[in-house]
Image (tube, rainbow, N blue to C red; front, side, top):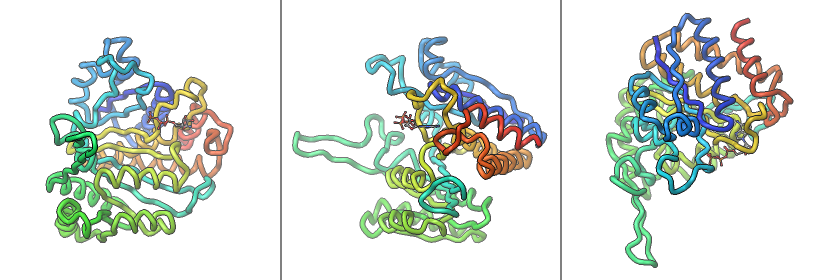
Length: 353
Ligand code: ATP
């Protein structure tokens, strides 16, 4: 049995997360997967019920779950100087070291390229945003008013584990190819260490192919011919930019799911924010949250050797492919006239029929 936390978040999170849960429940039921769902307060609801946007009960409960769905947090509307209103730092707190972002095109959805199916892994604990390896701050300081110095932290451990996660994911895919993106000829020590660890890990996965591309050339290839890439692993700042570029290639925010993974747990989290401008109208696109949930099932299935979870993930993916291919119930951002709940209904129907 899996234990999965459900954190709706704010604004459209209150609409898209419940759709993801319904879809996951339908797939789990079809595949004989038992899940103990644990709804937990976070964000505005946490503040209303426990006086804090990240209640202690949520943190304590999450320690004991296999993974969770995290809806977007409306942090932009939170009072700035009140420490009970914070954007919950769950990724850091649970040492979720890699952000996994798939980029997939659909034949009938407008996109710059077709036949794109890439999974990006971005290291998120170090690099230029080295928040998890410094006691305070983001690694920037200003010794006098004319000079600012920023540093970048790369560790063997951080590089090795994100590379390993990339190969584990590649193994589950048809092409089994990992591309490491860096800039070793310029950043010989930092990118050099990242590249060295990727090469070491590659040697342990003879069933997967491995290549390396320099980040500037990669950014160009991604725009001109992204189709050959399968799994792409890179450092924090490069990944931050490239994953947004990737999402832009295939249709933007509404189609950008994500999973933050650690050694033991994972958090399903769509790339989009809480979109307060469209909240409460049942028009938000639930695709990204549903597919983030699908990724959680797939990752837990492989990690915990649970074939039913792997199967449930595949079922969700096929159902979503069908809903998109038939262009039934698609939300406005995908060119349809459907609603959030209507799209959830359609995916559930495709799973159960
Ligand atoms: P944050 O700072 O919280 O990350 P953001 O600046 O990235 O947020 P979002 O809240 O993600 O902004 O949304 C940007 C715009 O994209 C929204 O105003 C909304 O119009 C659109 N949008 C985002 N997510 C969705 C969605 N799931 N369905 C439809 N439209 C969306």
